Image 1 (cartoon, each protein chain N blue to C red):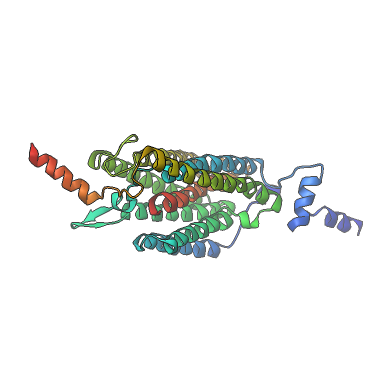
Image 2: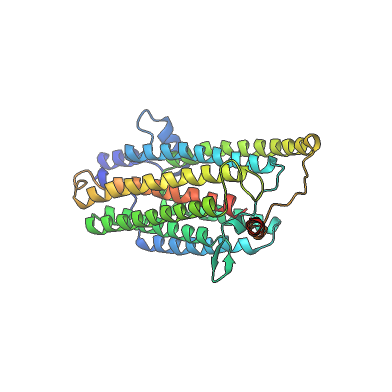
Length: 227
Length: 127
């Protein structure tokens, strides 16, 4: 009987009581694998980097006395002579969300120890990510060669538009590219069974990074392209 | 086994949130066809916050994590709202002084894509 009482007392409490317990007890605070805690802390620091970019964009846009160009026109694509506003960006948004979905499924199948499905779903995620970067390259090419947009000037209005655009989407694109490489490496190791002993938290950790990239895009899409 | 204590949930919730994110993205894109104004900006922010919330809560499993970790993740970024508020207030002031002392036109309109292409054609015709 005393055994049961002891395990009950040791079981972590939930909610606010758990929060106090986790922080005040002289022991490990986060009850997650260390890799996951470190990934979260990295993502919090990355949140600060992207927020610095987005707030400086806000500041630059509100202080620019030259008029801000119309993003929905500049990012339009023509289909049969009719320009459809922001269509490429919308497609990129849907692609990234699709990739987030396949990643979430990969995490789930990872914990079920279904190696083949996990690796395949991660591969699909990486493929969607790569196509996202490809579309971004197409978009950059079109803006640079077609519309003459440069980081220091553009023919439509405030020159800051170009610097903000290239910096923010470039940094996000780098994150996607890094994520694709990361996913491919982990997918290969999953497929080869390297995590059979260690467990499949690594898929969830890689997933956290990938969802974060999607998360940042949500803010870029809303604040830069739509605003 | 502690090694297997990761986040494991029924697949259904992922499919539901996936569909929801698609729908929200569709709505988000649709705001581009609204005229500029409070309604449009409010909707842009609303759909942005909803999408971000579902991604963090469900896809990144923050909803199921212990509060100690959740507060570590969501706590520090709260100070960023202060940064946004300060920079926002400051930028209005900077803009005002630029208009006042540098004589910039506060009502200038940007060049539209159509105008830009028309100018390009005109420049080509001159050659």
